[in-house]
Image (cartoon, rainbow, N blue to C red; front, side, top):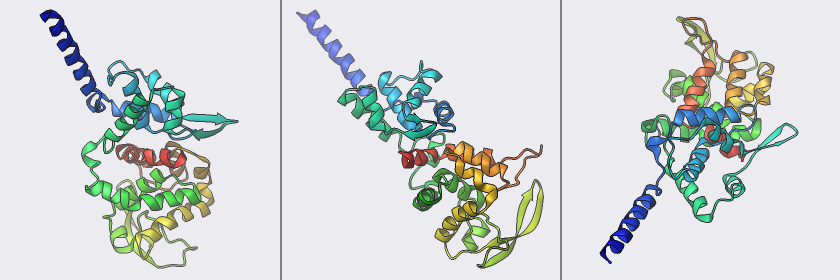
Length: 289
């Protein structure tokens, strides 16, 4: 009798341990860089997929273990979010994919709980605190960036990353004194106020530049997309559907002439780095659903 009771207790203990191990997603085992890179590879030239959705589904399918998850598995799940119709790509919602996988109600609930667990998590978790300087700036301009996307089709991640890069998180002289978040110059078509200010155009070279002046940041954000849409050299940017491609076209069009010591253009690399570090591509995936 006693051995049977001990066996039952051991089984119950094992079940309890397993149940508790499934309550929260195992963040420590997630190779965030690998998930972002593979999900973005699938998304490229199509539509942006949310890496957190993919990681959460894989966590449920593999009992919260990530050690033996292959790149092929990450890509397979990522592809479930993309629908193709005559080379026109659209995005499936998380619910669509969960139903396609025929997961039980309990497992679907776990996936959604895991997505919540990943809120504020990424390549640089310490910088993703909603009360911190970085996320406060991002959240401050996020809605305006989404409005720009709805009107002009400039991805929110691109708008936000450019604002971060060009204004140094809203702390540059141009942004603090003149509300110019994007470093947009005042060309002959600009009828508003302008200011002459020193700017770094090439590696280790500073010149004087004439820049637009705005009454507030909202005006700057609105004018950013308008400026790009009215300038024919940025035409190809609007034909791209993911941040990797839009960033490359901005660089190709000469939005920034920033180079490294070897003379290589660095604008795309800088934008992509910011977008991935702060999960800005997830905003893109949300607006495309």
